Length: 365
Image (cartoon, rainbow, N blue to C red; front, side, top):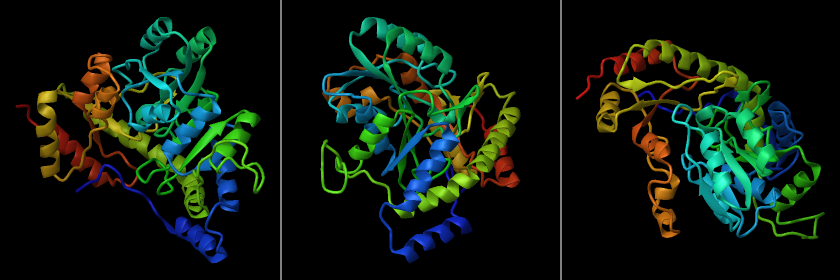
């Protein structure tokens, strides 16, 4: 079976892990500091705070931006549940804006509708979904007009870009995930980026029990730290990230060309000024065909996945909070249609041919 994801672990990762184990300094230390500096520099930010996972990175970013109980934070409903959950962790209220059906990212037009309607919006938490940057010109224009804090969920967007800047460098803070299936990984892990020195200082306290110095705890904090073992993997992965991204882009380009004449699927677009790093290569197919299509692919030896089959406010827990279906019709429709195909850099030419032949040979019901 050709898998949708393929975590890559090579000689360099094993070498650095061995260094950490031999040092006996397996908790946070110099490898974490090196990884923080390297990833922040790569992403175009001044400061990086490595931590336990993408969810802790989001929570930390929100706290760094001063999100408190009762605040409203606008976000997309079409993302992994951690995006909205991190808002709830702060005691704040997620307010959902619909997506652009072409990009799957938050629609600036729909976002402005929310900003006009909702009073006292403290922040907007955008998601660069599937590895594609949001329309940052439009988002930043709204930020200037409505004066909100901007937080970027870049958990799927390592190396993605808009014009000459990378995802994660536009807002007051941003969050990345290094889960095992991401474009680069540390097994579990995350990082919160910022360009503000005061926010960086506070964020470091947040992830380390609120410490200021060794034994003084001046704010409420958590145990969100990254280990040297995870950071060592991250250092090795970051060294190879650009090469992997180029392979993902090349694979996606081959797919787009091969599927251009198929009218039963819709292939992903790459808007002008955007660098899509294809964490996922996501197509759309009619809801009535999706299950049959995925089974057909599996029978042909091709794995596939659905990211995501339910908008966040339709999840059982959010229904208990009072959210109702129908808030974001474009997101709800996308959740019924999306299917992701293998696009990772370890695909061989034969793998690519197998995926293409499987998709092209599918017959509608």
